[in-house]
Length: 298
Image (spheres, helix red, strand yellow):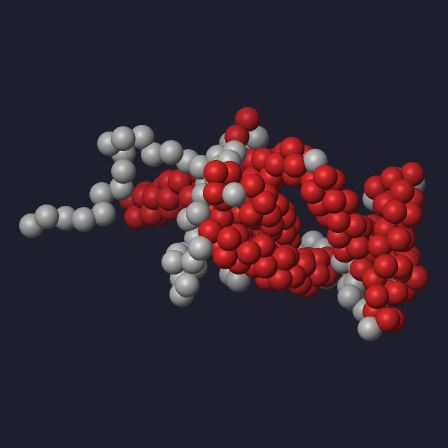
């Protein structure tokens, strides 16, 4: 236990140095014309150093928020506002998916068209109908990955509720605190750690591994070249499947940020009492007369 605590506090102390050094030497990881800079990004993006840098920032913000509550409320508003903004924007991917599917069926069934051209801003983009048909899965992935945190803010996720609804106010807030800290954050971190190397193994060669040390990756950088995955399930099908791996990382990052927002909101509402519940909560409002019709009379 003593060794674990020493290891943890050692990494927390080093986080200040690591962040300062990275900010003072941006060319070491931002200059992607240098293969070693790319390998540094690959290594540190899934490293313990990055985890403890984020964790230390979380501890500092939490301590500052406990001292100055407006700071913590501000963090809640920023994080929930970010989730709402991203979610509301990418929710339109659902409509785009429906429109594109109708267009594909219409072109195939009526005109027997084999290719389709999209020309946004005068730039022509031509692919086969099967390519656009398979690409519909990307829109669905956008909605799932980028609207997850937004749906959480809006209270739209399905709950398997055994005792939460009937629990007291303080009990609910404690459940939210524990759930965000013990479940949401660790799961988001695990998904990020696995997804990070999963992405990069389909972008560059030699393929990086989670077990590689920084020194080994820097040695591999001598033979580094981009090898972006462009293999589809069919010869003329969608070939941008690496984008799904990018969305996996975006999902993990947004869930982690939302977990912080849930933790802070629950902590503040626990300390300030029932009168603070729902403060600054930007929930979508359905105008009168536009409610979903969920029953029928016969």
